[in-house]
Length: 332
Image (cartoon, rainbow, N blue to C red):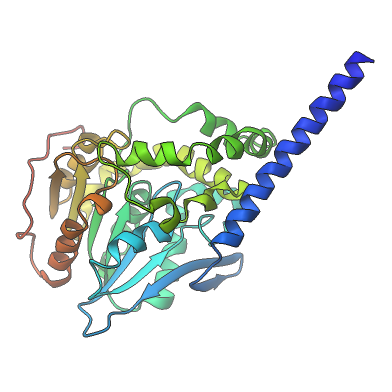
């Protein structure tokens, strides 16, 4: 009798957590509905938002967000600084309001780069400056490598570009497993994340305070949808092998690259990633921001805007931004 009662309690607890996770995701979806446009594929749609300048345009800038995020983070903080450009901010596949398209295989940054480039071609026929944050750097560097004729330049913000020691957090491994992954996501991942959004924001902004209103402006709660939560872990899990294979190619980059990072970034190492790609890229620049963590576009949006201005007008090399000396790495 006792065992039966315990089993009933366990079943009810599991069902309750699953329903709680689905409710959290549904609440986030209602609070932050899609407000942009879509590019359609055979397997789904990619969502983007566009802002056009009130006066003459200096060109087009495409924004690609990082992990645990969506287009809203990039657009909210960089929109005012880049108001003189046409801005197009995409949700990567499986994030924001973009479909996952080809399912679990879309975790591969190369496939994301291909899908994003197809979407960009559909709405941005002109050459553009590409700005990418954090995990979005993996797919964005692939776009720059494969389509140099389409880009005026690449601005990387605390971007993931190279293999790193230590691997990924244990819960990402569990989340991506078949069968176990979806269950773990609903029983543990989403409920835990719902209580950690503020703490997570504090960690990526540290040592500076979180931008007031960040969680709302960046629509971070959309991560609480179970499918999005799992897609996020899949992306993180797939990136290490991807950048390990891609990193030696950076010496072949044909576009100017400005890698901007904080010297206090404890999420993505400035030395392993930004400094390394700036040294490898033939037209690379490394900009190190003192006292800044993993959110340089929030801490110094004017520096990002200056980088975009330089790339949108420069025809030969980089000169305007202050540079930091990039330490040598294994790919030099």
